[in-house]
Length: 279
Length: 297
Image 1 (cartoon, chains in turn blue, orange):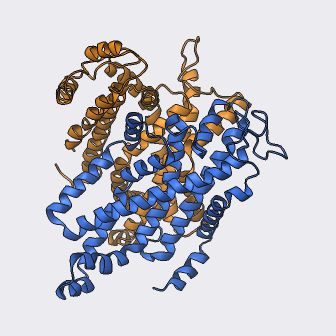
Image 2 (cartoon, one colour; image 1 turned 90 degrees about the vertical axis):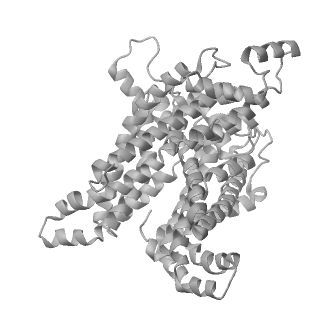
Image 3 (tube, rainbow over the protein chains, first blue to last red; image 1 turned 60 degrees about the vertical axis):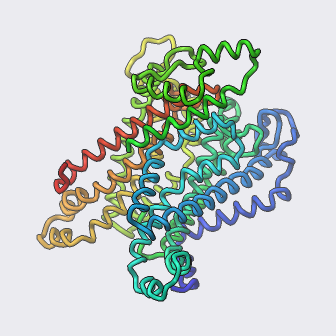
């Protein structure tokens, strides 16, 4: 299957294309944030709680900072958390899944028990526990926490696929030729399992972004950070008289999550037709 | 699974260790408090004492509320369940119905709309939609209360309680329904490819009978499996909803305790919630036997 064929299928899927465009827009926003944000996100530029106007499109927050600038800069935090957490979870999950799937037997059993334990512990309460004990509140710590509890799904997928890939002729041939385990995993097995990994990683980004916003929202984030969740938690305090405070950062979170989810959904359809329509 | 019970208390060691790094009190006061709480003992003694007491149902004293942890958790868990169970039932019913419809008419317009909207529901930051709902229905339209479980200073009536339940339950249900819809659809599609579905159709059975009687019954099993695996995730979602609507449930208690460093409460909640999740998994395991007669214990 060639990449141009994938691209052709991807282009036909409207939802996926929209998702891709949204993601592209968010990424560009994050990159050129200093250029397009009208004010410095941390500067007090006007009176507090100004409603949206020509000068401040999204209004101002509880201490008079421009909400539009903060939403724009918040995209950096969101992307950093989403992409960072997803990258870490891919590394951990794929490593874990490959070892379990390739070696099988007792190693596999032991590793899967670890996975199950992680799956059973309510990760949300675990975050609360860890955040409260270690007082780590910055977005970068939250990203690591999210990744370290969010890799199990990937590990399971890779493991199951390795079971079947291991039995294929090309793997048998490689084993017969005396290739090392590392060589077989990286050269023969992983490249054939790229599609589901990419799809799950993309959809995980959306989940991680929402989780970061949720944790910041309930007061476990760094209150000085410029993040959508922090803005939302401030918006909650003023929900009675300043609707704009909560509306725009929430909308930004929602749109970004929709973008990544639609993109992931479309990627699955185009990269791997066998998975078409599965969850 | 039982390993979990041993794993979770691994944390209090660190917890107690860190809580020694003081606060605003003088050293003498701190020493006194430590003695009172038994924090002057070596770590391993504290640890075993903690486990031993927990086995006996004693989770220790809350630092802030100054009362035993267990009653605190018990009352808040009941409140959580009061919100979670109706929401859970709603989202499962809704998710399964839409999922089946969508699978029965694969690639139709209905299917595309259902799939897109379920993905939208899934992407919704549910705490944000909660805030928006509060703004629209409570602040703007004055239709529903902003939060809490009942109105203060009024005798608790059924109507009053239901009006407090509507928003959290509906929001919580929508956040889960999108996921269950997609799950049901993919399980249904898998089952619909099986030979016995073809047989049923060739017998001349109505399409409705084939879908609901033959296909759904077999598709429901993997749905139960996956949903039960995500129970722990759903509990976390409930915590955020509770926080938005000031619902006095276990998630809100955990957040309050965490922000005020009340470790016995946070730890106790972790243990209790993990246990509840394990019980939920057990129930799911048992329900397989009912759903699939091939499985016998």
